[in-house]
Amino acid sequence: MQCERCDEVASGGRAWNAGVWRGARMSSRASVAIAKTNGAASFPGGMEAASSVTTIKVALAGQPNVGKSTVFNLLTGLSQHVGNWPGKTVEQKTGLYCHGDIRLELVDLPGAYSLTAASEEERITRDYIIKERPDVVVLVADAASLERNLYLLAELLLLPAPIILALNMMDVAKQQGLVIDTEALSRVLGLPVVPMSASRNQGVRELVEEIRALTCDPSRFHPDRPTLRPDHRQTMAAILELVRDHVPAPYEPEWVAVKLLEGDSEVTELARSWLPPEDWERVSAILLQHEDAILDIAGGRYEWIASAIHQAVSRPG
Image (cartoon, rainbow, N blue to C red; front, side, top):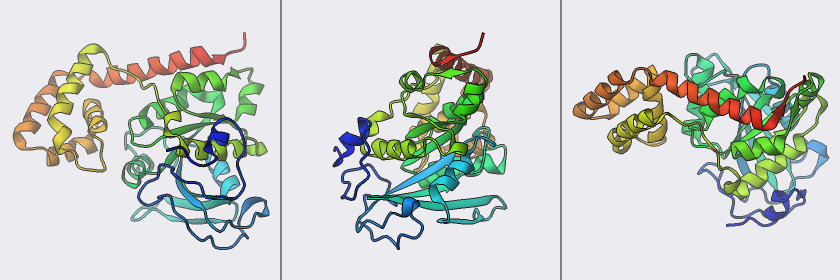
């Protein structure tokens, strides 16, 4: 269903005035809610609260030192809460951004280089996206180190949430002589790309507009994911056939199959507990025959990254 006034946002317009925004795709927790807001003191720009708002749950993800917290602070201002993740020593930051008829519930996920769950930060990030089902994940990336940051994107694309790539530090990339065609990158990746220089407060409004537009029109997210070699695609299909009926919500069977091929120890133990013994024995036998799959998966991601960079980035010299 098309949201009221979303056609204006999706075409690049700025629909910021009050009015009920209907029909958006929402999680159960952040359903299209008509809710009373609590005052206007924390609203950026001094905007008064709309009498009815649409709530969107947004997760900010990214590697360390990409300016993710700067983006979070620009959006939330003083309207944020700092604590620890339940049962963890890792800091948890949540906050609100309200403007007109939208209300963003934001969580600043810990900086993570990958989603292998090799660290507490990585485990928190992937568990939050899988279990809490944010309406949108904003991946904040360093435009000057795009290759490294796109590897995390390749992993995030396996998880069940639409993604916006917030290409931060565009000013630094420009200083280094990099020319990034963000429209071409968006076409290649099949997802929204927003250029930003958060340290200069540039791109924040455009990011909010894109969050709203994507929530209204999920078809804006149609990613071109990395692929496997034909033989490993057959292997993954065989594993998927064995695990599909046993993977409980909120996990996705496709993600479980890939993580098994990668040798992810945490997912391996989960799958062992979910599957009947005979099916697990068959999965184990398949994995034993394809121990090189992890290299193919990584190789496929790097080829996918190289292709995107080649089509959208020009380098000096």
